[in-house]
Image 1 (spheres, rainbow, N blue to C red):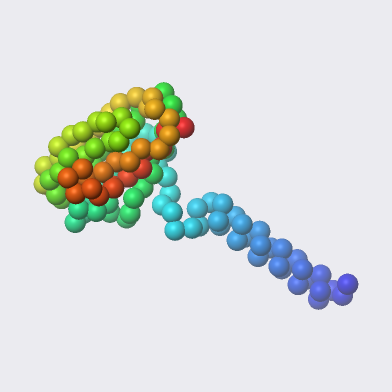
Image 2 (image 1 turned 90 degrees about the vertical axis):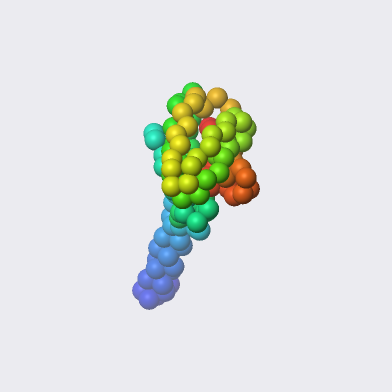
Length: 121
């Protein structure tokens, strides 16, 4: 194999490695996950600012998140069946233990608009 052929093969391998790293580290269109701690969800125009994010907690951790909204609605955490009213231009905070493993939708209940995912591992 000639020197130029070896360089071409090496360059191709580097490109494949970079693409694999970008895809594995969230280079797709999915939002980066918020893991543990206090999360904030901002609702602007009745939609989650920046798209639907995933809040990830380990089983047994305390789930804590605040919804800051420019519209009045009921915030519903499916699976846990927690509901709280949020006023227009107001905020509401949820705090509860992560007991039910799996994925749970958080939504503006009256509008049927998903604003976040809650993932309990």
